[in-house]
Image (tube, rainbow, N blue to C red; front, side):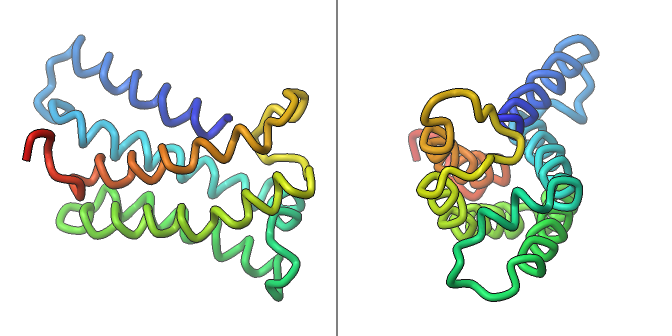
Length: 155
């Protein structure tokens, strides 16, 4: 839930900055969305190191070296955040971010099945690990839309 709140509140803040300042730099909704996704990825990347035990528990038991997978995931989130903001690489990185969200989905399913504590979650809400699964398609869509990988509406 915290990643979703970071994503949406970052986008809202950047939109407010644009509306108040009318800076052309933030004129594009996609650009504001890429910045918001980058902020979310940095925050979740940091949490891979500050709450590593929770992330390690999410990794399905059939995968070897869960601690290493956790570290690699955190580093990948930092790299994706940078790539989304790098001119000339944002479309490719948007697609890679969507693939990353697809690849980590089994960890979220594993977490829901075994009822582990959710990093950045609201674990007191009944069925929260299951509700959280609904956010993943939204993150995938956001990554693709923000990086202009998806075609504009009506085309």
